[in-house]
Image (cartoon, rainbow, N blue to C red):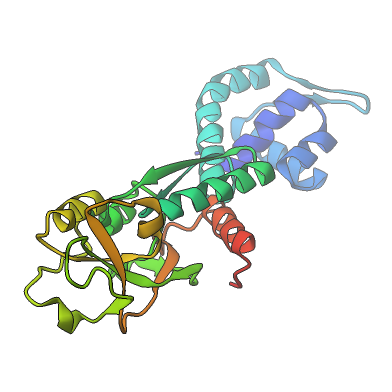
Length: 270
């Protein structure tokens, strides 16, 4: 069985017919090329190349070996190149998810910056429902996710805080507390508090119908105004913190490119 480097050196020399250029392409010394070809010829028991001071040419046996090996080598070379691109290169698609309207707009701006720096990296942006955030990351449906939700799985990494915003409470517009500057949870009485797994539109519909209240980031008041929903600052609540999340074993050059572009755009240190 031939080693990968032996195959690469032989097929490159068969194409270049020049020891120096073969050494450059295969990133080894000229002496290494000569040693490899000599070892192959001893194993075959015949010359594969004729060498003179002026030229290098394939022998009949060398030409037949090249014709036999080339079809098998091309898929190996292409597969190895794809693996390199996926792990270390920028060529390919990066799927980035977000929860919340302002997250989507920020990602569009970052995708444009990434495209300017690495045009071969295509960024696809997808909205993710809160309940799908961790499952989509773990399953590889998205490689990065911008969210203010706390994601528990230990396989996921949370980046630095990118944006903070006050937490508000969405409550029925006719509720007696809707005109207040702020409210505490103790003042809400028997109103049902919806959890983070509820989609935003479903939550606002239930709030507008007077059946529940829902904690939201301040951006919701701006992007989702409704006549049947009021927004009041939630007393004592920590601000919402927006971060990028990714899988610990899913860091590629494209992921690093995007994460660095986000921090640069927002002026956030690593």
